[in-house]
Length: 164
Image (cartoon, rainbow, N blue to C red):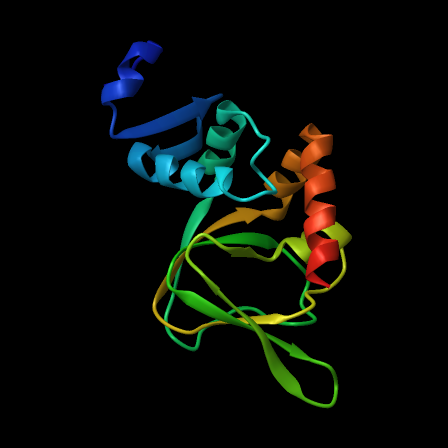
């Protein structure tokens, strides 16, 4: 069904938004709800309105990884913010002398924000420990969220500071 009537949203399984004849977003409603639930439980996003969370969820892409897959590599430029839907990852840092595991992240946790905030190369390597599913937000959309909310940017900077 094609409509401009928002009353249909409660029964829709998928919502496709078009702007100027091009698909702007294509979201499975149930999945968008899951993304919003994850986001609102992350201090970085907890002050965002439901509408803003839904807009962020619309922009997130699903990525899958097998055990041993490298999601991000230390030294590479940052291009995506990741939210773990299921599975687990190891965070490893190479200090030039040795590589060591510094964290394990699981469902509901996130990674990749540091390089997007600082515009510096990735500060760690993240490797899937098991079959995992991630939601990813690209740098452009992540920056748009930063620009729209001073409190969001302050929270991100504080979270980045606390991780060091």
